[in-house]
Length: 284
Ligand SMILES: Nc1nc(=O)c2c([nH]1)NC[C@@H]1CN(c3ccc(C(=O)N[C@@H](CCC(=O)O)C(=O)O)cc3)C=[N+]21
Ligand SMILES: [Mg+2]
Image 1 (tube, rainbow, N blue to C red):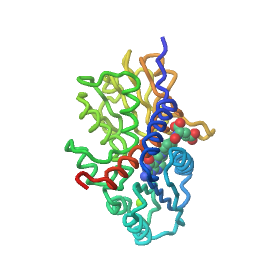
Image 2 (tube, rainbow, N blue to C red):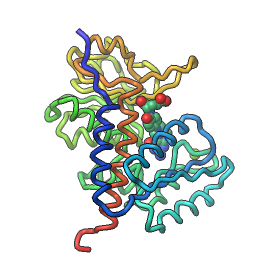
Image 3 (tube, rainbow, N blue to C red):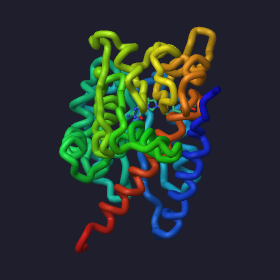
Image 4 (cartoon, rainbow, N blue to C red):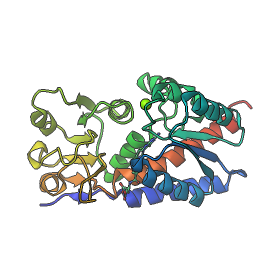
């Protein structure tokens, strides 16, 4: 038997369509600004796809490209300008940043109500304490994929492989909020394969090409592959050895065409939610 494919391209297209319909009823164009410093190749595809998707749903979208030598103070000045601009609803500063810039300082400088990435410590704290806020796009996209796949979350044993602030930690918070029994495993975990084999839902987010082998997967599991790894031969692969895993899983998301397109759709969703919250505050 081979696993059902969880088609992120299709789920993302549906989400973008619903976003476009909501935007059409607003009477203004939500504003999204992506700030890019230097020329990290991993960010290039993403910035292009995002700008195209944002324009297609009716956003006012632009990328601000700064030179690699930009200082932290210069970047903070750009962020302050975007924070103050009433036409801007969502701000995303592309990571990674060059070594002279401290990412955590820049992330904390983005106005929390415009934090389309959901990386600001205030939004991370809200998520961890069960309050409404802007949620990181990739884990949010994974939750949409799990819903689309029909996975039953309450009581399910979910294992998150990876503990980054961008994916692993917020992913675990969202699964916990959905009443899963959540385990986070990482590079120092003893017997990773055995821990992963306990998962009914496995989310792999370590950034290591095809690290998760077929025998790490429980028969009948749902597997979501967050990894986007470019191999020397140019191939794009996930953190999961796809063919091996698909032989044991009940459902699996591929790379490409899985979580990647969902991340972009959720960036649009966050920006739209931010626009509505900021421009029409409750009681105002
Ligand atoms: N502040 C910030 N927020 C981010 O969310 C962020 C970032 N910085 N820096 C770079 C990474 C990378 N990232 C991707 C998102 C979608 C695809 C994507 O759409 N991938 C497609 C196609 C990829 C391809 O064909 O190369 C897919 O997986 O099917 C890829 C990469 C977001 N990132
Ligand atoms: Mg840095």
